[in-house]
Image 1 (cartoon, helix red, strand yellow):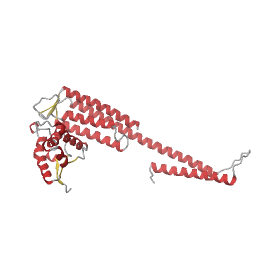
Image 2 (cartoon, one colour):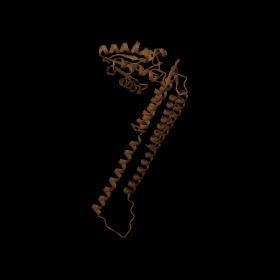
Image 3 (cartoon, helix red, strand yellow):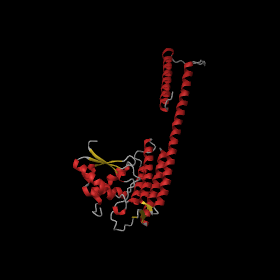
Image 4 (cartoon, chains in turn orange, cyan):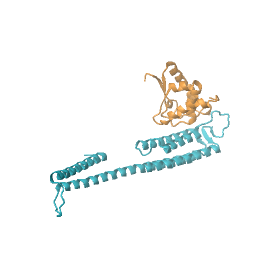
Amino acid sequence: MDNIIKIVKISNFSITPGSRYKSEGNFSAEEFREDILIPAFNEAVEAGKKLVIDLDGTIGYGTSFLEAVFGGLARQFGVEIVLATLEFVSNEEEYLVEDIKNYINETYESDTGNAE
Amino acid sequence: MNLTLETQNKIALGILCTSFGISVGILADQIMHGGITYDREVNFEFDIVGVLTLLATIVIVVVLERNNSKKDHASLAQKNSLTKSIERIDFDFSEKIKDLARGGKELLYINQVLKRHRMRAYKIIELAKKHNLIYKDSPSAKGILERIKSIQDLMTDTPMDTDVVEDGVRLEDGKIFFSQRRTSEIVSEIFDFNSSVFELIAEVNSN
């Protein structure tokens, strides 16, 4: 636990996460990434500690939400540091952790530098 | 005293081995002390040890047979139960996705439905692996989970560039709409999902 700076529980942001962009509606990936994730991520990187992301407690995630949050973070800061800093917890949907790691790793190949 | 089937089988086998040992011992004793002679006369003697050994053997065979039959019955019940669960998942998921593929449903509703079905399939497959009803690396189980994930991507991965009209999925006022091509892709994935389910049921019943 000493190596963990904070636990970010997505359901505290919203139990109904939406789509990619703020322009597409409430509780978007863009809103979560900018308002909650990036400040916590920067804090963790500066302290050299881990940031835990708790995925449980929502009604479900669309692919675009998770891709835009974590793939978007990797596009902005780099794959290695994102993978080294973030840890994921999902008791309800264990497979989400692998999904997210794939989104992060795929930014190597699919980074087009557009609207993100 | 409640003993497991395995323990009962072990005890029965132990008794069987002991009985066999006693019989061999008696035979050895006969050979060493009495020798084996051929006699034209047929004599009937009541051999208590031999009779008891025979009775013990019969009892042991009956116990083993009964226990194996119980095991087979339990295993068959597990397979039937699992098959029914998988068939139910197949039906519920396919029907729900066909309905969602018409478009016009809220993204949040689609997320909720997909979470429920993906979790359900994942948990039943994990349970089947735990009870050795399917292989740990079952290709059909993997196929089922991959098809659900693929359908989730086809339905909820909205375009990164919203200015480009993609021939895929479109989000409008919180509702999801699909192009005809995307709808066909979703339906095609449902057929692949159904095939994987069929293969998994065959695997369960062949093990």
